[in-house]
Length: 401
Image (cartoon, rainbow, N blue to C red):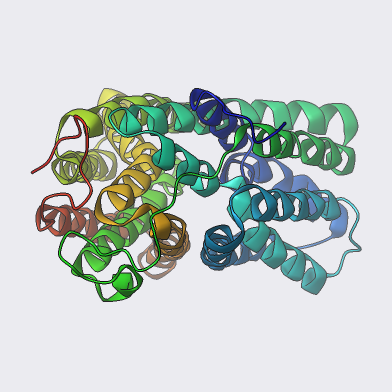
């Protein structure tokens, strides 16, 4: 019954649901609400939970590779549902573990690996397998779930924390995170795979993607953008408050970035269907570089809000960008593996960007030097995209170079 034909837009709905309560939303937008109360209750320095988040980001990269390989071998639903169930268990375990930092580190390591299924990747595999002409739009709609989660999860987390305390609140959040398991089982379908040994448009064996120039151009752009965009986003509030801007205004800048990310996912996804995607991506990266300059040298107010919006748009569009680009340059049979590798670049880049921003502040007492480096990385990422060739797998009305 579960394998009967299904309107593919239900897969988009499953993706929107899954990404709205995904691992990235939890780590970036929910967990921060709990850092202070958990640290105070357990008698810890806050750096312990910061280390947990770093471990999570790095292990998520590994998890996407392993999940991608399992999907290639066993299909979408079983590996994704299993990983997601383990992820839910690790979220709940935060509330149940004794106050032993090593156990928290191990738990967040497993959480990151299993959280690969609580990311866009498994849903993107299905969407790219069943959508062609409207692929960018479908991916953009899927990622609207993540935007909605980013806007609502801090408020929900704060409400649960105040109403029930941090332990019960985390157990409730784990229960909410389990809901997408049903969506995976009922709504996801395995896309039609290409035959083994399929060759690309250039005649290279499908298994040789690690020797593909296009693979490294995309991965380099993803990594550079992630280092910069995540590093900027995690620095906006402290940079602003260090300059005497009120916490309220600084938080509003972050909210503007989140709202821009929400809108950017849909708009950029739609543009991918109409224009050559590397040109769209390069433009978004350059605009983000301008946004970084506005934040670093703006004095608050409208200038900083515009800058935050430009960077937020870039960060929000990256999941659409990764899935769409991989689908146009690599075969369907290899999609999950290549996307998994790209998410390694994204997750590790984000961890590095966060660390570099903090290092800049520790060494110089300012985030400005880090922002200069981030601007350079965004420009370099745009240059890498401009070196991409025409699509290898362009069909329907998808734009080709």
